[in-house]
Image 1 (cartoon, rainbow, N blue to C red):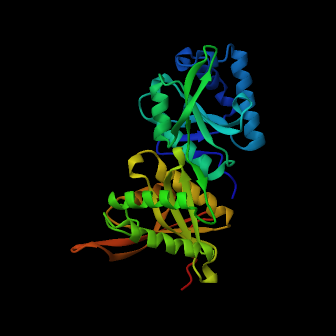
Image 2 (spheres, rainbow, N blue to C red):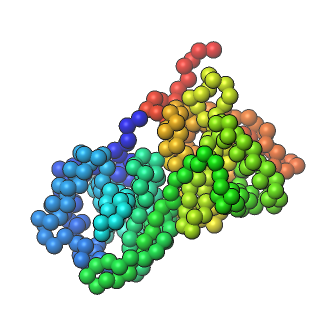
Length: 353
């Protein structure tokens, strides 16, 4: 499936720059108000800003991504620039550098957060497997908040600019899909699973379930991993913690070999509102496509609002089993079956009985 060039969110279209965006690009890159915390980074002349515009368009043509235009979908009005560019800052290791710069007239509406969350998920699902990084002066609190809400975590500091001032370095979780779990990963995964249970997450257990029972369920997944039926997908955050995890499970029926069912989709409750659910699904889609999976399925417990989350990630309801999940006496929930194609074909029934 080809990598999408355009991303849409609730309010925005994030797209490659076109010739018609030249004036917007120059205006935003030559506005001192948008470089308050990093004045050295502003292009010194219109010619310098134009050169950056042409370089960005060239990278879009050669590698299929780079910094682009933020457009309000309803008005088709360009309101910012940003995205991800493949860089090697200070001749260091390559990374995907996240950047966003929105016009002053639209700031304060959450558009930068909406764009950054989408760009980070897009990078994890589609772009080269490089760290997603952002650097910002601590005084630039709005920029740091946007990065945190997009799922990045502080991982250190670096000296930048002619004054040698320190910038905060933030990084998105990295994707792992190991063939087996070492002891440290197993314990971190159990920490996550138990925390999700206690927060009321729908991952197979009720709150305050003893850790050894959860460990037994994880051991079953590990046995299925050895059989090649289960694939774990982990997001590893700062300090090597597993901050999100899920499992793709294959059916033993060879007629269903092109599909997988997602189980135990869980994110760290302490990081709610930080885009982890979306990043985890992006990681799971990436891993599934690598295995040539065409259809992803997930069973969702009703009553938690999670169906809306999956819908925003491209899943549709394809079935429902009323009342089959008993959370407590008198509290029965539906099992909602949702699906999404992971190739470029539409999800439609063939009509044959």
